[in-house]
Image 1: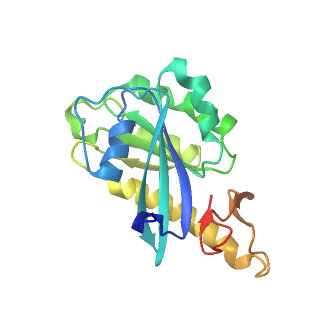
Image 2: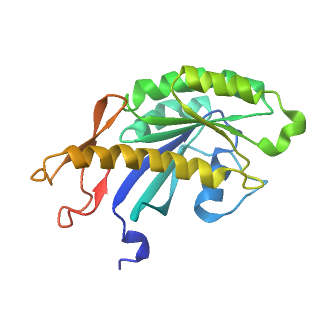
Length: 215
């Protein structure tokens, strides 16, 4: 039986990556279910959840994948980058080592994901400002150098969680819709969206309904 959750115009796959313990799972649960679990255990392998938002009158369904941060799962999760059009690269503002590892995660993402994926650098646990180990300006400069958007969030008190996901989904949507406008009107079976100079494929999820498009 189809529910309201099945009614959408676009489906975008977004991955959460970063070291274990930076709060990826709680960012996911806060955005998709408005829940936070202090006793949250490390993700094993990969899990995902969905939530739909509206952008310019269109329903965007986000399929958000939470990838395990532990080294032993890296080989398993790399396959899940495939097809992702957005990524939130998360570190803990109170643990500098998680920020130092951002460069390694960024390389892995660019090795395994589409080279034109939209990436946002996320400094999580901003509620721990008294324990801050990563200056905001330092992270912002890193993001600018690597052409990433940047935001600080707190899954605990909900600060900027909604904004982070809304911003990256809106950015992906604008890229996709701008390319669709330029596409030939006769090319309904498959579209493409240009991100960073080259194209990503946009394919309908239901060939019987040309209004549903999936990245």
